[in-house]
Image (cartoon, rainbow, N blue to C red; front, top):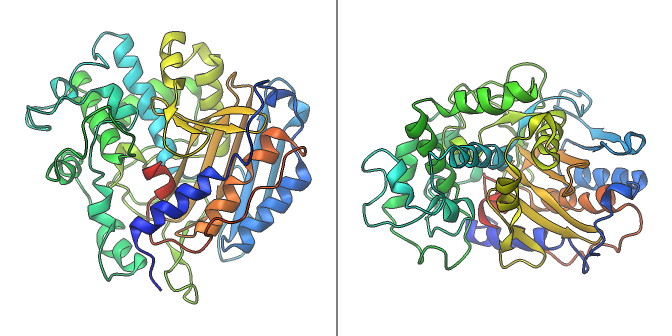
Length: 412
């Protein structure tokens, strides 16, 4: 039976809520707890048993390198290549962290006021003149923007894989056309009054960055973040469909689980653009998060900007907050900051301790599968908090979900 997108939202929202099974400690001692290798390996095997060809977990502890861990199970492709934790993959909505850094730097330079209507920083006609939404509200997913992804992916009566082939794999969308899909639905609520995840907002932020600087988003990303940090496996090549170099093959789960997985590696990613089209690796995500949160490599943003990024507001899901392009999850041993991403064929979660000293990246090469999502997120507890943590409740739905994008990332 097909599962509608709205039901998918509820399912994966519940899954994320289960990442923090009990009230967290206020001690913030994650960097001094030992990862639980047995729990991590068992968790990775659960990810594969749930339907992913392979999975990995990479832990980097910059205060205590002896605690570093890299575990991989299963296959990087269905030809039998073993999963590798150093290969490239589509990071989905983890892209939003990169976009947020670009926006905060513009604010630091005085080119953009986070609390002034965003339309002042966009090409004329991008947003209606009457819309007061600000960059801050967009970064917080509190702008009341309809998510254009709904119109692209929600096709009544069509299979997930059919929608992918017809609307995603080869189509090239202009960013302003994505915004227009959202605008035609009008405001969804008064700006600032509620939380509702919208990919459209991060498309708008990149359009503003391009308009203010006269430079394309890919160049701003490359010159401002990728090159200074030496992120050799990170790129933004929309609308090129291929992933260069050693990479992991991504698989889209059919709505009928009896059907084979669909290789969805090659796609333009233009439909998600600056909200989810970055390709990277676990090592590069570690370097990025460490530079952002610990101020290494000169720091990506000022201390004042970082405090704003981390100021998480409630999302309606217990122990899950969202700041300015950063998600906060309160684990049993304290809060962690980062993001997650699910895009056709790929799922990942990239988080770090508040001081940036320990980072964790977990990954699976299958999407459209709620059981894989739950099992992958369960890995954050043993990675950050070690073996002394309660069992995660298992009462959330764990079936496949009819969603091509990271519904988890695009909704909560």
